[in-house]
Length: 380
Image 1 (spheres, rainbow, N blue to C red):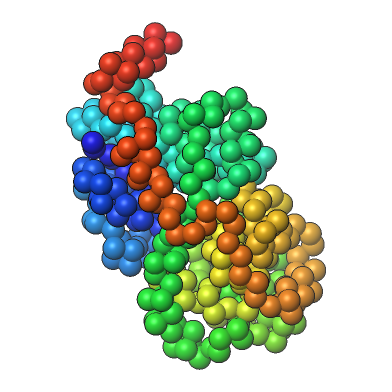
Image 2: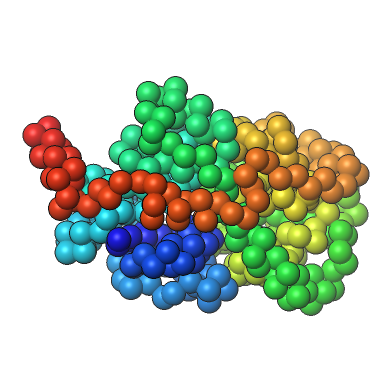
């Protein structure tokens, strides 16, 4: 059996690492394609060494651009690669443009698609990620879900139950594997910070950072939150956010924060594990803080990971940012509350690998099933 993995952005690397290790134990032939969607070394290259992922067999180097431009470049670059390799499965993860591009190309070629982290929904079609998720799941033949609400979402969209497998969360597989190594890096100590005596923030979503008024108000609220909690606030600055801070002339808003360049996975995990609370607009941080027990305040109107609200430490914040300090202060006072939702046990990748290697029928495009699928697609 041959599986092609497709990655393109930081969260993809974290999710693909345990899957590649698990499939390797079954002797599956694997190759890794990096679309180059995240082309900044600080967000991409060192993740391969941190997470013990083999260097990509191919980097498409598509770079940045509008959603249409970026996705179009991926489609053009991916098609000949998949035509040559003819894998039994194209495995794609998450909800970025690379995820959708891989699903579209594989579907047109009659190749079966496995989507890891399927079924997550925010209900907000204004989010590009939501469109990517819905379309990828519509095309996927094996849909691996992280929480039960995802199964319910897929069923509500009319997707057959035999395409859906609830396997748990591969993000937590990676967290469990590397948490001791991350702790040993003691990044907080290098910054002169004490365990549980600082706040950690991330900010990168367009709705929060692309509007100068919104970005300024959030950064000022971060500074006020640090003062109200009497705790320093650490902000590893995403390249998109950093560019906008400079472009909008907002450098002054960072003066009372501890601003870092983007961190590798291990360093960020270390800081998150020892923080008093996290402020974020990241989906992955919502999940990781749930297991770590770190209070989390998410600056979004909705979340596609509802289990982090019902069982975890996450709280949505979508009010006036002037109220953020009081909300964070209350969460810090509550303290840590670790939680493991069902199947967030560090064995999600093993379940995925077993399903691909033993449970799912071989659906190579050159098999009779694959040929029928390709004929049906071309007939449309």
